[in-house]
Length: 116
Length: 113
Image (cartoon, rainbow over all chains, first blue to last red; front, side):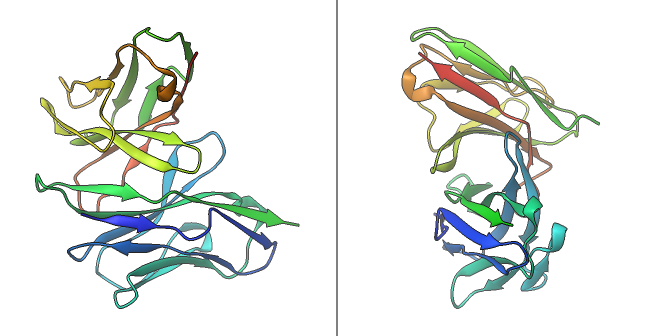
């Protein structure tokens, strides 16, 4: 069984500053890992995902994440925050259920606040 | 291509009432999911389906029922609504599992009073 921990329910940065959102997972097998973003009053949409092809994954809107097996982490970064990045970010991990399907489990989310 | 659509967008229920949340996808996806989102708690899986006629319980299925008679539709039924079911409900779909991307609907906000 898997679990996902997102450190910090809120992260506040200034516009132009580095964004770092943390995600740690536990899984009994090599997992598939995802970052989703949720803008106010909308559903979630995919930012990026790790599927074992490359440990550094680039996503939309300048975001990237690095899979570190030794640290069981998949932190999300962006070099320079924009006001439009203000949103809720969710990390998710997918590994097998008892029935053999891979159903994602989501972290509690991190709210990114961007100050002018 | 509308993606995943959900109706209604918002609903107020009285305790003990029942209702069905509708979800439809037009991407011919095999997998469909229902989640509830509560503040600070992330998304909790209620039920999921891997294909028409096949459904399975998620983490928080009590008080809910689902059916999957077609590939496109995956309605969520609330029987005897309780205040604890006040939440935002999201339907999602994906072509398969493992590394496949989930596509989410816009959500249904439900208030049980």
